Length: 413
Image 1 (cartoon, rainbow, N blue to C red):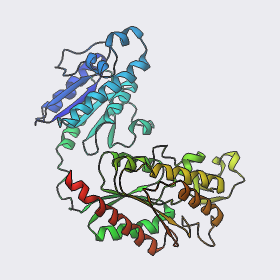
Image 2 (tube, rainbow, N blue to C red; image 1 turned 135 degrees about the horizontal axis):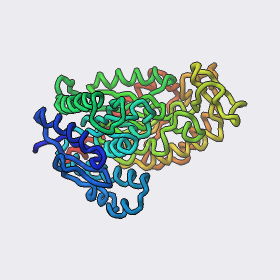
Image 3 (cartoon, helix red, strand yellow; image 1 turned 45 degrees about the vertical axis):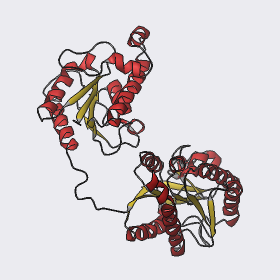
Image 4 (cartoon, rainbow, N blue to C red; image 1 turned 90 degrees about the vertical axis):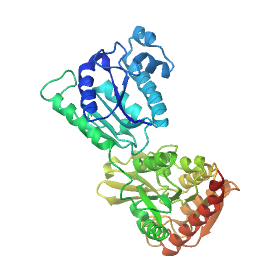
């Protein structure tokens, strides 16, 4: 099947610019599919495969309604969602090798929303007036390249024209990179979550899994890291998950800066991917500098991990709730899963003599997990500390057993 570069933009106001971008792409031997997200008109400068009416319809609206409503915010949201629906259809049928768009505020929002449905590895580039702005929410966990337009995208001129040409050349080059060349073969991919407080455990697990031929990809449990890991799991990128560091649940509960949201821990559970889950670092909630700690927490047990990182020790009540949440999420698993409890401490600083050592608080966590976990979940209590070598060996052994357990079922599908 011939693959195309997908062009997304508001052709009603920026037709001349997109015509030039399309020409640059075609001149490099590529084929283009164009989606018009401009609600007021189109362009006659080049053929458009998906006009605005089709985009609006894909989001269950009519173009006439959007025009008559004259609500810019609604129109941007609808056209972004409609473009995402069409983009996903094109990606799912194997017709897209790369995606490019450009625009100001509205055009950037629409383009980035549509790119959210494009899997990792398919190049995505947006030439935007907002490249220097914080677009972390719009970019999310996607491998999107942002390129500054320097000036407004309002007409061809001596600054924007060469940038459009460079963007066209870039997306063509990116689309033709053989990402499989030179990649080492492996027995499979394993996602693992880590924090500074669990580094010793994760490092040892990584070595053990690599010796078994697995590629191990670590995600820093800073909120963004957890969201990214969940997104990659949903896209089918991993064969198994070793979730050593579930600390983001604590930030989600207490309003810390490393929350990965309520969906954390659910991707592997819902997809049935073999998973080993540990309540790693649920003894802590992350804040920034000391003066950023909420007033309600100022009298709590606090520890400066770094000048810009203040950790708050979770108490027994919070650990009880965290245990319930972890157990309920893991209990939704449709595949093989094991929860392993390090009874002698769940973080580097939760060890005898450590600043967060609080056995009663840990016991509240463990008790809540044990009382709320489904009977279908294998639960193991280990007398070790989370960073002990014996604990790492146990985790890897459990994960390898789960993957072996699932293999026959996968091979029959």
